[in-house]
Image (cartoon, rainbow, N blue to C red; front, side, top):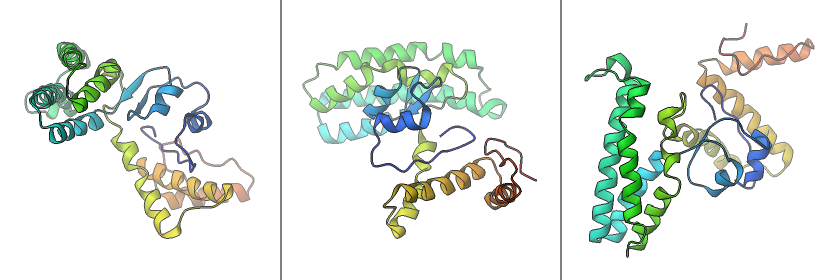
Length: 233
């Protein structure tokens, strides 16, 4: 999923081979994802790990562990996360923000100290006696720089929330229809979803696009592009 389009692929697995089919053997852009291992296997370039997944894991560790170590680690991690995203929200809000806007350079410079504190916090708990704290600290320590790519790269979001929401319509479709049982059925499901959801992202009418595409096919003309933001005529 990108900022102006979404592509659906129905597959039996979430493995790296599916990413190769969709994005090619080498992807030149920045991927934003959860910590699913297939993304690390596939992509060796810039990778933004979802901050929302990380934030949701922190209270879970505190609830499960209920130790002093867990309480300290989770309290400090949530405080750092809150301070980081206060700057980000001011940057995203622009001139309408109450305390005044911040520039891209300011949003990069200010959190550098916070990034170092994230790294140091994780490092202090890598040998924690609490297994849950230890696992979360490791998940934060090893790919620490991948939590902050969004600060420096324009157009990169700190979460993959939009990609998480995109499959919901497909899931709602699958439940009453029981999915597909053939390769042709997979394509039949994936392509209409790609068209309708991409048109909605671009504020285009899916029926207008489909009508234009069918007319073009019957007249042996080039089909309208889904990547254009203007409405088809």
